[in-house]
Image (cartoon, rainbow, N blue to C red; front, side, top):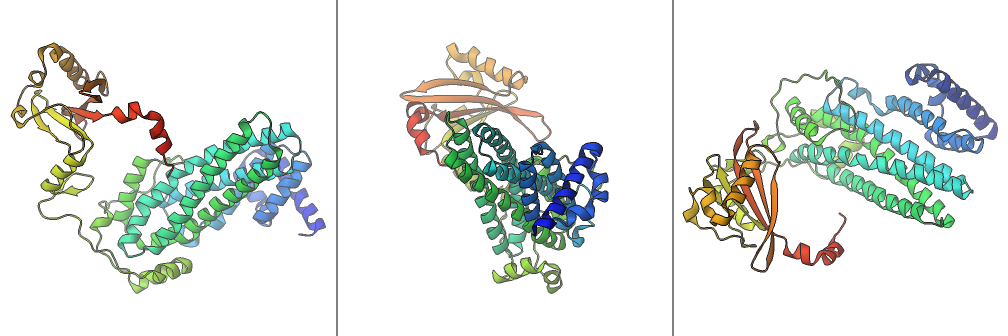
Length: 443
């Protein structure tokens, strides 16, 4: 960009910032200055922002410019094929989350770019604090990518599209790892008594790269992934995605939903679908190329067998249920509403209190010595009456340090069904706490 042209654009942006201060309505200014901002590329925006900082424009004012730029960029990010997505539809909310991610990324880039220019140590600390704030806010994006990875990808994989999810998840994981590492570096740098000026530029460069990484992910989702899912997924699939996404949570205010689906939720394992030639023709070229490169052999595996128990979160045969309980590193005892023992598990890893099949049907209080009867029943009564979400106490079994939890067991409707006792060996955690801390791996 020539000097004269840049000066001209800087003047236009200054006028825009002045109007932002006076009017404050992004929507109104969006109409008025659409052509001005649209003519400024993302790389030019960075250069202009840096020049404005040099001229003493407050960074808080420049951040408003980021908001406006993102609002205009939003139209470019939403392809025509997605213009019909109803308000409140999972795709609508995911795209709105991407706008949030883009805004935070632009703000992060602004703080980092400014940090690279300043020479005064106090100013450096000020912008480092701003950088930390942006990085911490950016940590919220895990919620967005969990929905993509756990809700969107399984439906693609069921259709035989495996390359796209693996590539995208790899990039998302890389960005999140970069985020964690950059935040650790910045926090260490900012907390040191004497600021290592030489490392400030290095950290700022990493933050700029990170912002760019997240911006590229936004682009790939809105321009490639989302149009593909809109073309492929049925309403029933979106209903299931919406229900589970609401449980996971959103980064944006859901507001009033205009999307009113009538379809029954369909989970990936219930799908028996092949991608037709007409479906392939609707896919974005970049998505189509990657998807076809990995082959399109649908996953037809049947997960549920005859005789399996539908446990709500999956299927297990009676034999598998028993084996799962045996494999747990803890033991449980379940008593019904009448305080009668109905079930207990036996762990192959940990042996807790002695229990035998002869206690089935026995009163809970009679399973303990008389001196503990009042204590046990007081805890049982407390959780049954809702006085506590659970009761916890610690004891010893031989040389083992054991934690005992007593918790209410409730049905999906919230109705009390009984009480559960969970016994877990915590000896190693208590006695070797420092050793265990050294074993912690950040995944």
